[in-house]
Image (cartoon, rainbow, N blue to C red; front, side):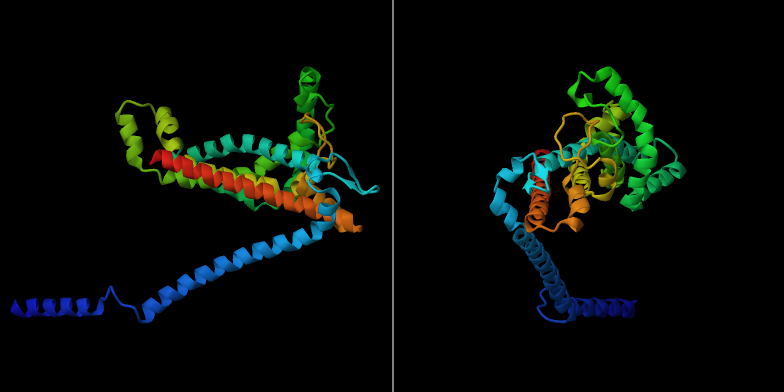
Length: 328
């Protein structure tokens, strides 16, 4: 008995001797500091790369900046032959198509997240649904664009014609449909960003403490009241982050949009009319741009897209902080 007590006492002494929380040297401390400096180095390199890319684009855009100035933002004309360029039609198309996509994808993505995170259906059904939805994100955008041309446009054309025949007095449906257009591109973008919203929102809802659900139901709330008054408000910051990532994807999507939007630089309130976006015009015209002013105008559009994306992310971060402060 005394021998076992003695061995335990010696073991404790050895552990206490080896465990030095105030150590300033050694292999573990060196690895910890090395990893910290590695993270700092990667962050600095990322920032420098971002500034370098911005500087290169700015240098290429200087001819258009000097020629058009801030009037480029409000210009409506895009004439390559006369070298007259304006960004407003492309800004309009980019923002409207992305807004349509987000308005469609957000409720669908959150609904999928609720179905796959709560026990509405058996687990053997939930898991395949979550997998299939996330698998959509792996489909190349050009494939989705081809699907949009050969499947979605013929499917939507009768609906667009019906909207035009009965609601043409509304500016949103005042143009005779031809197939491609803002509405079609918005639906294609919505399909592409649903997996992002669904996957992140599902992970957010899964980490909400189960005690909140139990407490809500114990107070007499129904299941849907618990979802809308407890579950979703608790995960609102994560859902907002998912929406921001999805919106960034929609703003920068190129090939699928270029294949279904019509690539016509015009501003029309009708969702059935042709339009164009900044990424689509960059993809379709950059390879054929020869004049320095034309190249500069395309680079100017790149800077505008960069600024829009940055602004969206800044606003989203501020909203997350405000919502987090209110919940705290």
